Amino acid sequence: MSVTPLELLAGVALDLTFGDPRWLPHPVRGFGWCVEKLERAWRATGLPMRLAGVLFWVSAVSAAAAVVWATLPYANIYWIWMLLAIRDLDVEASLVLRKLEARDIPGARKMLARVVGRDTGDLDEAEILRAAIETVAENLSDAVVAPLFYLALAGPAGMAAYKAVNTLDSMCGYRNERYRLFGWAAARLDDVANFIPARLTAALVWICALLPGYGFRRSVRVTLRDGGSQSSPNAGYPEAAVAGALGVRLGGLNYYGGTAHGKAYLGDAVTPLSAASFAGARRILYAASALMVVAVCGAVA
Image (cartoon, rainbow, N blue to C red; front, side):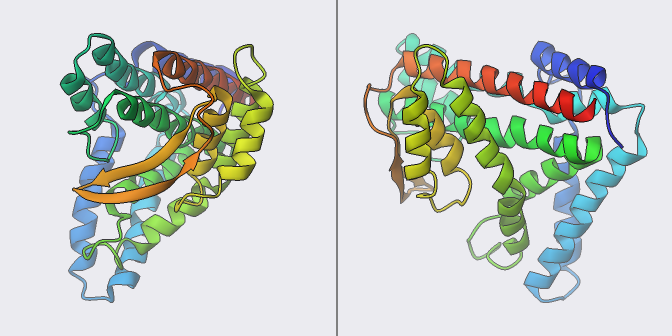
């Protein structure tokens, strides 16, 4: 079931105005609770772990889509508001910068740990800025472009299904002993779901890079050169596009649980990472989000 352009604009306006208020129960948190229950239930079946993981994935995504579908069209605006995260992405990342501007490096590390999975306890200012810009770039795709893409394709239920896929990957898509088999479907199908949105996000960043102060040709060149260099088939594209647009270098060595994980570099260090780089990434976030909203309004009209 589709939405009208007015409903889309109303949902986006609520997200930009209020974000995800803590007093309002968020459906993604409720979904996370359900996932924990479903995981225990499917593990208890005695089925081979990979098969149990596939059935777990199908049941969780289907349940999320069904709950939303049952409320349509009356809750269209609510679901668009809840399943977008433009404001929260900006607010959470900007809190990191404010701590840096106050010369509070420990505070910046603490704020950063709320939005990234890597270890933050020993990061210096440049590495904190790199992580903040990378999370804005990656989540421009995961939290904005991809949900709107699936909204255009399949309405709020499609949007909810995508958010369920993305949440399952963040909860179960690990290559550790617990999830290597059980979480296989969650990881692989998230890659599939994000294949087009990640590249669409890069294209939107290219358009934004036509604005004064950015590098359009450099953004295109860096995306084509470095976008496929990451272990993830998707994350490198929006990050490379942003790195090229800003003229900075992203990627490098990260630590997760004390273990080093090297990532290929994205972009060239034309300018050093700075507060101005982060401000440029924020402008790209809002400009690309606006372009995507306009495109989806046209698609659903």
